Amino acid sequence: MAYEAEVSNVEEYYANLLILQYRNKPKARATVKLGADIYLGDGLVFELNDILNIDIAVGKQLDLIGQILGCNRNIYGLSIDTPFFSFEKEDAYGYSDKNTLSEGYWKSYFNSTGSAYALPDDDYRYLLKFKAAYNLKRGSWGELNDMYDTFFGNELNMVNNKDLSVTFQYSPNLSLALKVAKFLNYIIPPMGIKYEFEEIEE
Image (cartoon, rainbow, N blue to C red; front, side, top):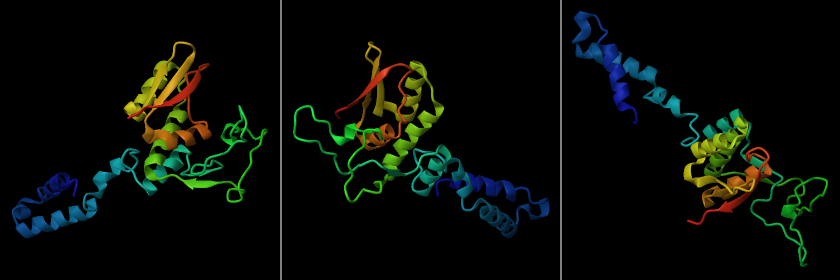
C-alpha cells in the first residue's frame, strides 16, 4: 500500500482518543483502528489527490480529465494509420494538404462515413496537455514558452527564428498527439507569428 504510514498515523490518532480506562486495552484499540481503516478505504482516500493528475492517470481517469477539458479520446475525420496519396506529377498536393471543406477530399470505402481512431493512453495524455494549453490561450512568447515547458518539458521546445516565425521542435513521442492537435487546431503560436514543426532526432 502506498500510504501505509499515513493510514497507521490516522489509526493511532483515533486509538489515542479513547478514554483513559480503554486507551491501553489492545482489543479496544484494535476495534477503533479497524473502524478508522474502514473509513479510510484501505488508504484510497489518500490517492484522491492524484485522480486527476494527467501524468499518472490511466484509462477512465484520462477520459474524465478529457470531459473536463473538452477533449475526446476518439478522433473523427483524420486518417492516422493510412497515408493520403497524390497524383504522380510534379508539385502535386497530397490530400493531407487539403484540409478545408471548400476544397474537399476523397475518402476510401472504409472511412466514407468519417474515420474514427481511439488514442492510446500515452498519446491521449499528450493531447490533453495540448488542449489544456489551448484552453489557457496565452498569446505572448514568454507565457507560451513557460506553459509548454511546464506541460511538456524537453519534449516540446519553441524556437524563435527571429524573422516573425517560430519552430516547434518536438520529440518523436509527441508525433501522433501533435498530428491530432494540429488537426483540431489546439496549437497556439504567439500572436501574429508564423510557425512550423521539426522533429527532434534522439
